[in-house]
Image (cartoon, rainbow, N blue to C red; front, side, top):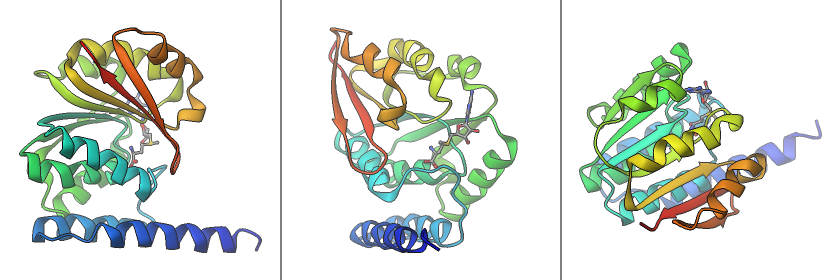
Length: 205
Ligand SMILES: C[S@@+](CC[C@H](N)C(=O)[O-])C[C@H]1O[C@@H](n2cnc3c(N)ncnc32)[C@H](O)[C@@H]1O
């Protein structure tokens, strides 16, 4: 019973964040409608809150990202926030997921949002699969096994272009990762403390 108020409050925040994102194009509105439906019908799984979704879309769109990589697809919620940017930048999302059922649900959500043409889902252990990434990466988002973040960082950094960004979710849960990005002189890092928190890192050179 005690949980009712926070849940209602969180739903209102999510609704407000999604409403604020009301799209001006039909493509954008289609994606937003699937995002809303996923929240309303509980088809997210450990997904970012909508505030963080906006914080993924915004830099991707601002830097004109063409090649976006995500570690931890789940059911496609954060991936769809990237798709809002990619439909404007003409870019592509490659997203990695170890769980077959979640990957299948994500595939359906991307299709429902008419975004399946700009997304490739790679199933399997991302620690092994990231080598399959083709071309220079403009923006990478890490949101999978927390103990694996430093390994993902080490594998993604050589693929990231200078001026590219790496975003990592749940900043309070990944102290080793925070240490790794803040002690590397080729990187500049800031912290986004809305929602569940993001570590936002620029590859300077
Ligand atoms: C926090 S959820 C991702 C949420 C998603 N980014 C979103 O906001 O909708 C983490 C996901 O990472 C996946 N995962 C965990 N370890 C993995 C690994 N080694 N390789 C690929 N995916 C992994 C889990 O199966 C889970 O679906």
